Image 1 (cartoon, one colour):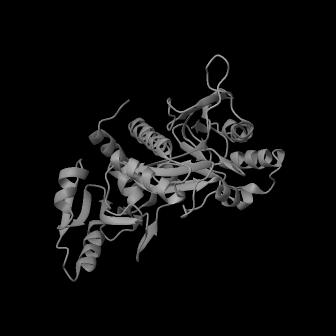
Image 2 (cartoon, rainbow, N blue to C red; image 1 turned 45 degrees about the vertical axis):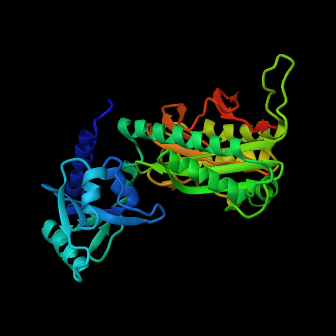
Length: 375
């Protein structure tokens, strides 16, 4: 069902109160930008998109749910960010004893029992791993918001790459992409832009003040509603080749090799499989492509959601994939890469960042992006 926001918040409050019973604790305290967005159904507690924690916290006890913040932040957050059955605990932002008073309030609300926290402080306990894993399975309302984020992110990437020129620097392309993201209401978690030469050397690197040259590779992660969508696209600066019937040409050798490698990983993404199975599938695919040990020298992605990644794929990440999880992998070969964010639904992967206007081809039953070639 497409839950209204208030019902989603009520569901998550009930979920957190279940944690209190399970862990014999007195309160759940959530400080991080990721957890705050999860608990409030997409609200933000931070002005800085690179911050780990923000200017407000969530505190949930058996019979109350609080937003802890200060007088400088409360008016805007009440008007624009947070909805739901919250009690606001607002303190003077210049109060010298602000931290001490907040800690006293938290301990009093918890009734002297343990406080579970995503970023535990003194006298607090970390959220158990099993509880942290619960948020990886997204509700239908979260999935709908995620689709919005994915579509907007893909549109921003396409806009930036279509404007790009071979004499642009990597930094110019990155700046154009960041502007396109903000114009769509998205925060740029990271934007990586590289020309062919640097992409061959580093696979993924911050943009530099060097010309793109004959090819541009753009990889980004964008956030809205707390949800992170990742994708990458490529553009070749040259004429688009066409068949005699006028249709776009079939994929080139580089695209074919890259997408064949990626397909091995995506085929392994099924409910009931361990995340490590995807890692080992990639390892085998790289070896077959003549690039052994690549998974040990370059990050490959993993489970996505309120962080990118929430859980990175590795040889021993035995977390089981479940319906409703989001996944994003970014395998790469010298001079070529590919990435989209997918939603796992049984044995099916739904592409959240698919752009129907971008050139693509069917690979293993999935529509996958090709390198854009424009004069």
